[in-house]
Image (tube, rainbow, N blue to C red; front, top):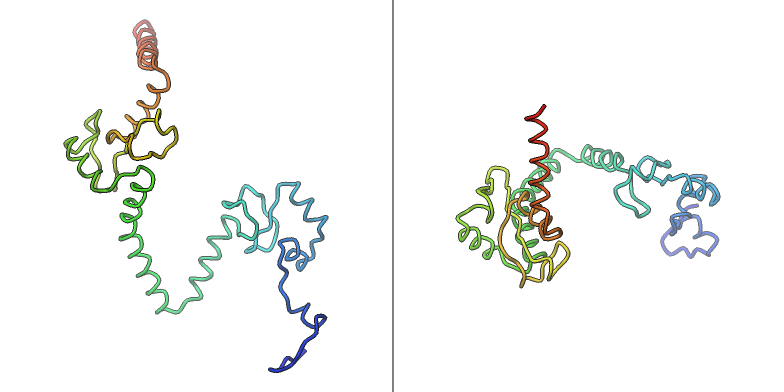
Length: 207
């Protein structure tokens, strides 16, 4: 059907031109009936919009409908990149380098304030107060790999991973932070660790 400007279409003529609004309606375009869609869902399958077929739901990183599977995400990105002109590729790479170089530090500063209620200046001051290392051991941040110390807080005040900002304590390395969490959960944990190590030390000597 040829459509010209000013032409008035009735509902019957508009229907084939409309895109299906529902997820089930889109699959009908590929010949899958609602019953087949239900059977695929019961079998643990999900529609991949990149491969145009059902894939195991374990292959998807997002639970919502209308997304490609993990392999499809990479294939779509490569396909879109290959379609760019040389100038567009250079511009894309330039933006990517700026994003990775500049905003990683910006995202870290934003996460410190959002998750712990403190400022990046507080982090630097606390690190200087601890002479540049973990509060419980000599571990220092590795500037080469952008390794930072964890911000410790009292879980009696804020049980989750985030803090209100009033219960933050100091900066710990990952190992000390995990050990402290065990000690706070089980007070006799250090004694249990010593007994465990000594029991195997005796077996090694006797063996």
